[in-house]
Image (cartoon, rainbow over all chains, first blue to last red; front, side, top):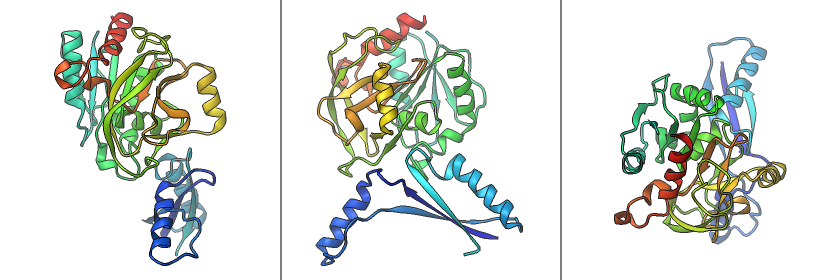
Length: 80
Length: 220
């Protein structure tokens, strides 16, 4: 089974990189761009057929390593 | 004082820490590889600066899961002293030995320069050799030293006297100008500036000597 994990900064945590990207886009002639937030996409291949089990396992991976839950939140997508 | 310096792949201040410890304690620290699962019998463990595991995923994230960190955690749980400098501070927050996290500098640039710090606390094994309110100059060299924590955690750190060093001119956007903090039991210190680089006048100053002297007096 394949899975995707999206790791992004929690609301309220300032994102200096997102801000810089926003400024750059404004400077490139995209004045319609407001706030930009940057995150990570992690693709996983799992030897696991059961979706419930897979999701629980990935949640454990996120809590333990993939996300720093002090500043980040995560979303899990199975079989993208 | 017996000491150990942890060495991760891409640590690059491990030798600075070793030289500082040799200069200040008169004996060589144990250099402990990240895959070792036990620590020698020591009073102080230093987690040095650098770019452990190439800063993959997040600074300090991979290092926090290495075998040696389990040994460092158990050393800290038993009240043993741990000093995390720069990447070492990042490793300590990722290991949950210290609260909060270190994010990309607000100005997005790597900052490498001497900075003036206020010593906010002299009631610790690390800082008893300083006067409270004293200004010291330590170098910083980091791209991700922007300390963040929720307001409740910041209030608790301040209320419990655990903010030990504060920037006088904030170089990275750190919450409340925080440069270094203590653990709840006050035996773990993490800071972004480098006290080990200022123990010899030949390398630009001696303000870091008192930190090592404090540890020697407390732990020997």
